[in-house]
Image 1 (cartoon, rainbow, N blue to C red):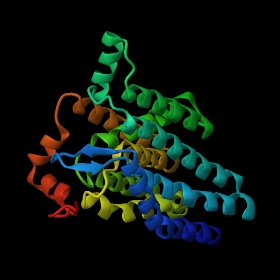
Image 2 (cartoon, one colour):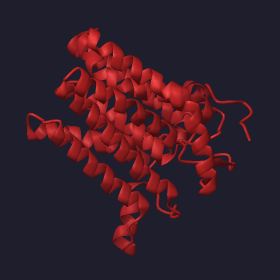
Image 3 (cartoon, rainbow, N blue to C red):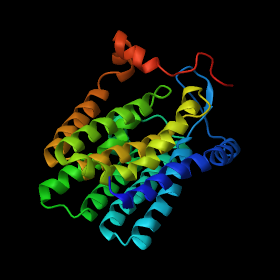
Image 4 (cartoon, one colour):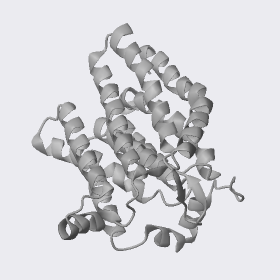
Length: 296
């Protein structure tokens, strides 16, 4: 571990911890005022778009980290990686927010959005999110200076699909958070195997505010105080995809992309929740951490 990473790492963890309570209080008041209540899987009315807390914590931590890297330590290449993470998180959260705020919930999945476009000449909020996520992924992948057209295509596709994949799992409390953790840990193992601990920490340090924010968020999701919403699922999905794009070899990115494509296609035809609930051990993992008596 390089010494110059210690201060940014400490800031990346400390800022979400310091801001968590005031952000939660402000978000609760603002979301209630906007009427951001949605029925969850049990039919209970829960505040949605709680992911603004997670995204806000991440962005608030990245700003001083970028200041330290770019100005104090004069590391422009490292600064660019953190800046693109922040820009993508902001964009992904904004596209998710507009979908959370939309009243049109009739169209579900890619088939539903494209059917509405082709048959009804209607652009759904989900279709805007697809366009926004795709354009964000393409722009960020290009800004990362890919070596070949193929590497750009894989990176852009991974960045575009990862928010949607996490959103597909955001149907039960803390399920999306667990998938996020699994993807991030798996990416960390691949990164360590390919480049060693120095490479892992150089890329992973930017994910520290993400991990800290998610850990603080976990209990709110588990108690059903908030729903992550598309705002949070998109932001966390982007973070997963970004870590894979920046920290793992191209072959590993391509393999993860194929998995994401398979999950996306499968979700159009089968219920992921039903598939999880039919497996005893997956159902146990899925229920782990949830409160027996949700907060009202």
